[in-house]
Length: 147
Image 1 (cartoon, helix red, strand yellow):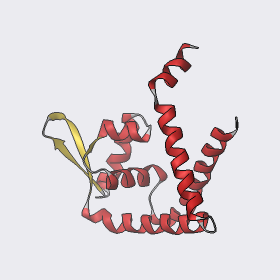
Image 2 (cartoon, helix red, strand yellow):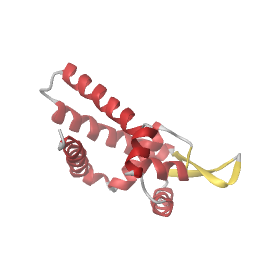
Image 3 (cartoon, one colour):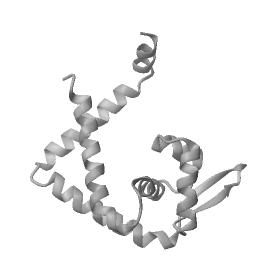
Image 4 (cartoon, one colour):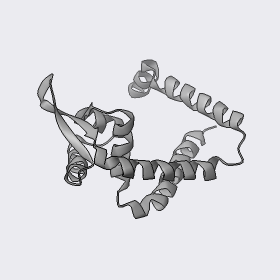
């Protein structure tokens, strides 16, 4: 049981690396495709929100967004509620690239999850959701920081 967190992390790492290999010819870095995927799923995020979700420093995200904006793949729009903040959106120009990335992901998922019973995959999703829920409880994080 004590190795399970490491196994989960290692599995995520191997999946990311496999995706990187498959997406290598598309001309985007892992950091860039993570931004594109997240903004496709949640358009209009503020830069600080996106940095938090991706677990990167805001200045690091700013550089990534700068490059994506220069390439015409992402646009910054002033937040009407806060003139200092930017809302981020994937551009129409980025859609073909996002579709190619999605196809790469679909192919990877078919290969890596192939031969696994769909009910087993659903059970795994439910267990992982419960783990995230349990780990996110304030009592878990407070107890750990007090020890």
